[in-house]
Length: 475
Image (cartoon, rainbow, N blue to C red; front, side):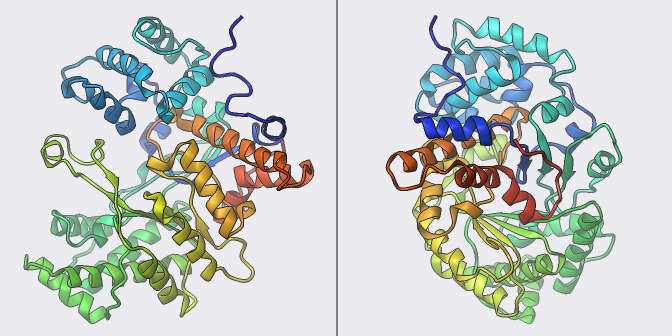
């Protein structure tokens, strides 16, 4: 009998890696500290109508692949095409994705959640569509049951300061939800003064904070009020998804003048934009430090590059890519500005362009702190780096220049509840990498040492780093 594609030793190519995965990593709980899951769907224990809803609604990774093989946009994202037609188009695309992590993710998810071992393609599309949908009608694949089956102990969703957080409050009050679900404060729209719609956003921020915003001081007050509201529902982390990290030191008075010009709809220079962004980011960094929140920096995405498709579909639809720019000066400068007054919070830096790996891996070593393990972290392979080569490179570069043993590990960064197999994928790759080092004689074959290291990276480091106190049992 032919071995199924997804089997017990999938991605594990050495005996040490197999032992580390099966005996130490496999059963560790998950803390998904950065994702884009819907708190509304968690609160309401959403039941998905079909596999397209859980797989294809909002998944820009799959959309890019479908476009690449020539699937018409009306089927990729159009409202007229049925979910079955969209699934059939995806099934026809899958065989072309060999070499892309989508091929692995797709079959891991089919095996893990549906017990389906058949390869997805045009011939098996109808059968898999029918079987998956049958299972989705039961109670084993609602949002609550998926989180429980996946052993997810904690989640941090991604939330705008203007969000009312009603679903987080409902989740906290629901004893049927075993997973701790916390918001993440993501104030990008209040920082990116150069973006269209900034003034309209400030109006919305004022409404959310229940105050008027006429000055820059008012902006800072409104952000503080919203941080207080996030604090009340257990927030422990912020996030910034910005193209570049600014560092053009400015006074508060300069930032206030720049904000006033923007409200008057005057054009801002590049220098003014960077000064406003820098002062606002520095203010926020100090706030995070005072609140003992972790600051996440997702750097280096150049977004909405296809103007025609942006006008048709809007943001986050699959038209973003890697940016190339000088990072070292701004990264060290920003950290140093906060560190001078001991206001640098715990921080995780993620880069989209792998040319910056070693810039980050070396910069974080400049700002570690006594009494705090791994205060400044190099985050896991993000977005286009969320694949075997990218993850191995990120971990290797971190190991070469820092301490891999203190790494806070993997996250899904996903909108799909089936993406928890990405933690399994990461764990298999981590264990295989360490196994390779053992086989080369570069690391001792000490399972107490290596097993503890693996379990720390899988769960314990993040649990300690964020201070959320998630309960867990040793594997």
